[in-house]
Structure formats: structure tokens, C-alpha cells
Length: 118
Image (cartoon, rainbow, N blue to C red):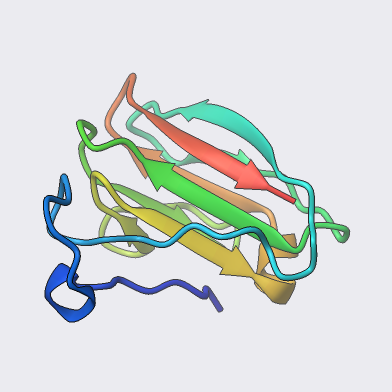
């Protein structure tokens, strides 16, 4: 299962956030070294990351100016209506055994997701 949450600025006292939600990005608790890659979306379901038994975390960030995207953490066909939503300006974090799976993504053609793995 994914491990991510949205924090409402009203709950944290945050002000002036570029979107309606504030996200906290911290170093992984297990000390994993993160690598970064840009994944260009094509409008069709495509690979996000290959399976890796050594991976403990996958963070997926959708740029503020992008359209919505979605991630399928089972590696099946990703669909905007049947995946973990990644709205514009949002970052999700997937940890544990789920982070080891092959994953797919879908989003608007020529836009991109930034993916951190470790």
C-alpha cells in the first residue's frame, strides 16, 4: 500500500503555500540514498519504475503547472480513473514492499513526473 498524506495548511499554520496543500519531504528513515529521474508522460499508460527488491522508497512529484497524473503500483495499466492520483503540485511517497514493485503512470502528453527512488 502507499504511504502518503496531505496536510491542510490550516492544520499546520502554514501560509502562502503555492497550492492548497503543504507537503513535508524528509530523508527516508532507513537512510536510503535517493536518485532522481524525470519521466515524460505520453498520454498512455507507460513504465514509471521497474521492479527492484532493493528499493525501499519511491517518491513521485507532479509539477505545479502539470495536469493530473496517476500511478498504478501493481504495474498494471495505469488510468486516471483507477490509480493513485497525483494532481498537479502533489508528491506521493510509496514505501515498504509496495516500493519494490514495478509501477506504471499516465498523464498528459509531454508533461513529466519527477521520480525519486532509494
